[in-house]
Length: 202
Ligand code: AMP
Image (tube, rainbow, N blue to C red):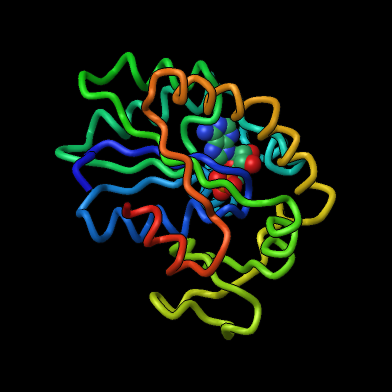
């Protein structure tokens, strides 16, 4: 992978976390999942968690005024390469990130059918400690850090519908922006994690 600045976009449960983590690890890129960061903040009841809670509880996106400075600060502290999972999610987020960088990021967009997203979300678990994604039936503890595996609260069926709506309303214009600038790679996200990873790696 010749790119050192990568952003992963895709609807909820499209595999951003699974694929992004693996690609970051194999290429020695710093990795940030904004969703995982927010869930940790909620769990620890930090000031960020208190600001974000009502949005996550409703399946809505956290406002740009909160997200943009937080992620730009993180990016500013990174050295050689990084991968963002779940940021940017709006056109102002794309523009803010671009304005910070001389070498613009490549966007990897995971495409998965709605039926498959619903199937995945119904049996998805996440480690409460390291946020690794798992599936029901894989046991109760994270194979990597032994943290507890639990369903995500925002994966509840009603909430999930809102998150899909938010994706269409806000992220699709961001995807279009990257496509127009020829900085997007749309990847078929259907199939096993290994099959998808082979396509992601290219
Ligand atoms: P994810 O783990 O990527 O599915 O994100 C979970 C939730 O965190 C989303 O549904 C949003 O409420 C919030 N979130 C994560 N990243 C962003 C972002 N870049 N902009 C706004 N909200 C975000």
